[in-house]
Length: 113
Image (cartoon, rainbow, N blue to C red; front, side, top):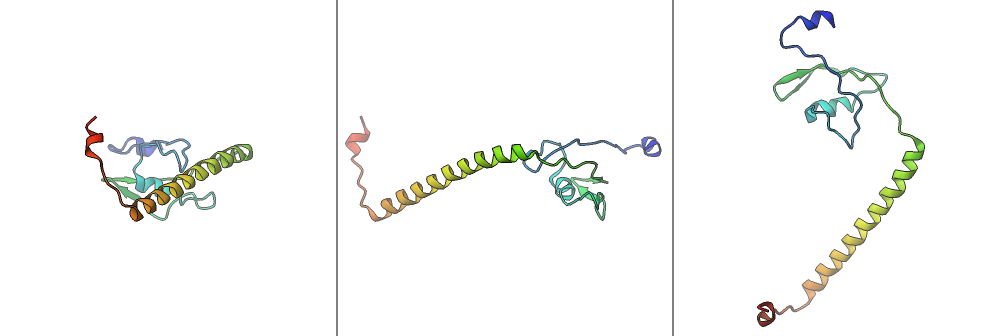
């Protein structure tokens, strides 16, 4: 690290922990994509990452495994959300079908109230 600190234009920094769902790191998407391919067995990518006019040498520093209790909690929450979304899709599809097979007339007098 000491040698690179004296070279102008070289910046060494750590992003800290981030997840696939929360990417508020300030890093370009190309760098994040490369980072998510890294493993503990292969913590360095095969090449330097070129993104947005800059070059990034990245290294996987730490992997934090999710808490099993959090997974249970999030799984139930995710399931409820998916059920609500599926229900909304079914209702919208039914409404679209009803509108396609129905004759619709607009009473302009009622619209001007």
